[in-house]
Length: 310
Image (cartoon, rainbow, N blue to C red):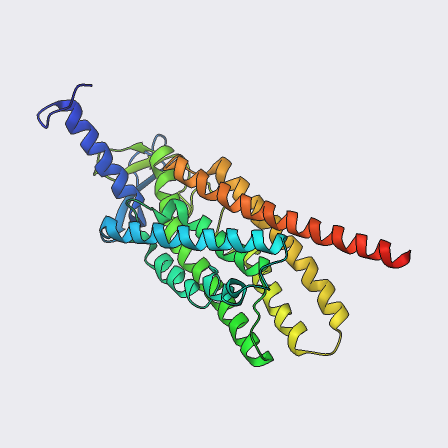
């Protein structure tokens, strides 16, 4: 392999391209200006503002270890749920503190996603952030807290709902500039007026052509399910109707999270594709384990009813 030297034009070209890509992906505001060529350049844009540089790679590495540990804890607890042992061990008593949606991990994830624009080297949240939000949502749906007392239970659930809402909004503030910059980069032509000046045949929209949003129907369904769990726990009226509505919202939430995972694997920008696909595949593994747990529960109940009828 031949190394490129700084005086080599190819080296300079690669450096310029990387600098342009960084500018586009970090752009927070695209400004449209009047065009002198309405036929070939009906829309002329340039980047008016960019966010500051990235944090040191050590921040990304710490987030990698923390996210991996949270995922493995969720995976382990799901497997224990399938075998019916999570409520019989000391680990089961501590699970709300180990889960991504718990009172310890959730604030850390929310803080990381809030700074997601600058966590963009080893573990870029512009690519992996949606998978982290899905991990939080899956954890919140799959496990119900075992807090003593209705007030404490309601407080934990309300905190989880608030954390999910904040995480989804912060995630959008990270991924939407990235999606917009990617769309501006791949579906525009450079006008030559400045580094980020581009000509487009159609108007540039926030988020580009990518439809995924953190603040979405899936997030609302997860939050609605948690709110109905609070109502079911503290209210003694209409518990049957509340349980039915809660089950419907929960199942719809699982379906939409699964659809989002598949959609992001198929349609996401081709940046860090290996790590991104691995993250969403990990989310699908948790979803499959939850489906398996539900199937085992239904099978056990069916066998119990069959024996009782005999």
